[in-house]
Image (tube, helix red, strand yellow):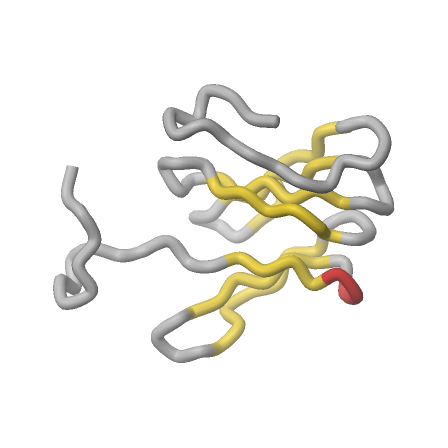
Length: 101
């Protein structure tokens, strides 16, 4: 496994994802251009965000809907929604990606 070196153009870092609470969406940022690349609508009140260790998925909790949205990082699309019960805010995932809470 190679580590990320900003001088190596063959290695790309994961894009940052930011919850836009007032817009009920998640923004994907391009750090090179300092622009919003995409916005992904999710249920009301995005709050907690976590990316899987392999960088393939982002999970976003929604306080107004008590759900967790699943976002595909290669297509920037919402690919699923998990009912998480009431008042789920913070998210965490283990380093191996096998467990989350």
